Image (cartoon, rainbow, N blue to C red; front, side, top):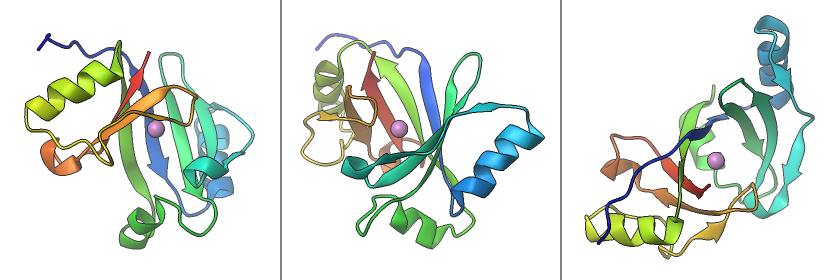
Length: 138
Ligand code: CO
């Protein structure tokens, strides 16, 4: 089992109940560059990208009936930090290594194509300091 080395922080994802209000906060109160809202039906979210010099923040709100973030918003009606996304060179190798270490990879354990068209896995928050971690192939 090869050692793995974590790469850049790709994004911090924040679930919000009101995407327009959240976008206005980042744009108007912080002076951030923000994208237009993008529907991602395959992922059950609408996203606004907040571009920062060294990384980005993704503001997520549910799209459609079975959004994966609906449960989070039910528990956290004001929204909150949903996950961190860290880059790795090889997400398949990372999944195998972490599974071997006893970390639960959500779903089948096989990488899926994430919101940016790259393979991703998610690590169980109970195995990672109560934080949902997305690993994305750089
Ligand atoms: Co993400």
